[in-house]
Image (tube, rainbow, N blue to C red; front, side):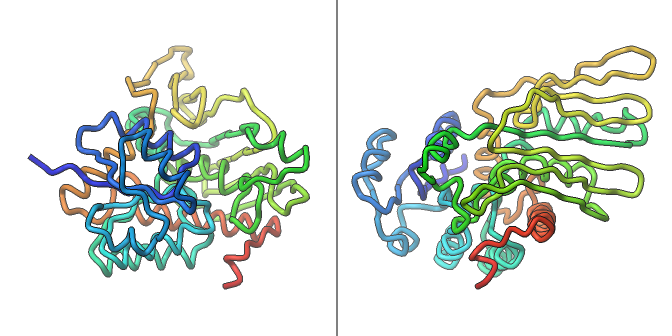
Length: 331
């Protein structure tokens, strides 16, 4: 029987609680340490999940023998330094999306993991869920693919405060945040996994006064098709996602869980291809990570290093076109 994997967690924000809700479904998950800049905040998080080991010193946690792996849920701008600290201290890393601020950071993180014979994986949950795997299994039924339209528009729970003059982390350029990194990434990963890297990108965006992008549109061009991505942190959308082929069109009600998957063929027939999956879909990425650690693997085939690198390349090019520069780019 494999040993449970002992996790530390960096961050006590909303995504950290979401992570825990999914992780607690898994028998081989153990949370053994919490890092927070403020001890009181870390202790409150720890008490909720039965953890007594609270750290306010990152290096101390990285060197600790209390953990096998770290889940990084800090702001995007800190992913690189936090990951490197733990990799260089012999800990496996599950890093929340966006993996890094830019391509340079992402490559160095992957190289450090390989040099230390450790697992590093981006926490991109939507490409691990059973419904996305169903898309991959059934994509050939559509014939030659001509167009894909992926939409992820979500009015941020922090936007009202922004409009009232309070700029929270989600809208801070210095933290490598904004609509592309936080929301658009949900479109990019599935597109690359299904169709590969684009030959050309055409992008546009609208900005907030804080210097981050509020929303954007990008066309990822391929030899025989276009993939169109729509993303926003300042509006919602009811548009389904769809993949159009010469033999039929595959639709999904959302890009997060890929629910309600239906193929509508040219002859008028329909096929539902959805699979049963958990509501707390983050459990699938955590389960994948745990199994890889237990098996001694250093890379996921579902959320591979190559796809993470290619996604960062796409985001870097979109940012170049729209003129979004992060402080991390200037280091």
